[in-house]
Image (cartoon, rainbow, N blue to C red; front, side, top):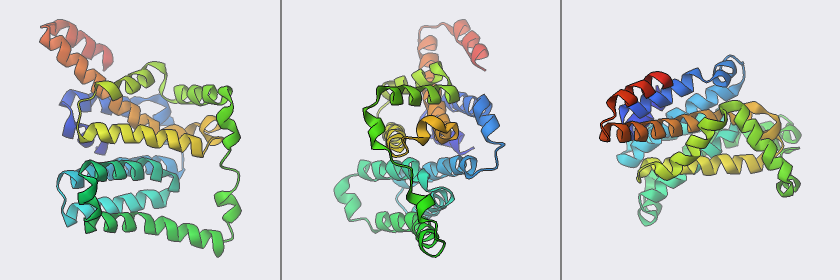
Length: 251
């Protein structure tokens, strides 16, 4: 539902439907959603956070700011790695409203504090009182992998195993085809977050397929955007029958 509402807010309804179909029926997503781990819940909360973040970016009120902050804070609390997919888009949306205005806006600072405080407190208590500092901070960052071409190949192959070649290709193409505006800023910032996430968790990104779960909704958005652009092009050429056949084939 949050994915559908998010895409429908900026793109035609057929883009929202295509995104939703891809997101719901992708085999890996179905399998992963049955796993009793925090990651599926994290993905749901990321989408809810993004939806309310863009609502705040469009209408800067305290109500929208608090809803966005609470959902973002809950998302990062469920799994700290979500900060790459809610924090970077939040910064991008803030800067898209004008950085001078943003630095003077008390709601921006309030949202950032509420979003970060639960996860920071939990991590601090877990690392100190709980004695889990080794498991929290150890064996995660491997910069020596950055210079190995095979690492990039393994990363790509792991991403391909989750979403497949063609959808991944279409999602990258959507970066250039998507109309300018806040939604494009949001979409690009998600890809920036994904890349930084991969470099930060260099070992996990090519060994743990569930680390690519956020990629599913990102690719779903890109597939929906390309689908809408193609439909618009076919209708403009009055190829209505071909458009209907393509819709039937897709769905």
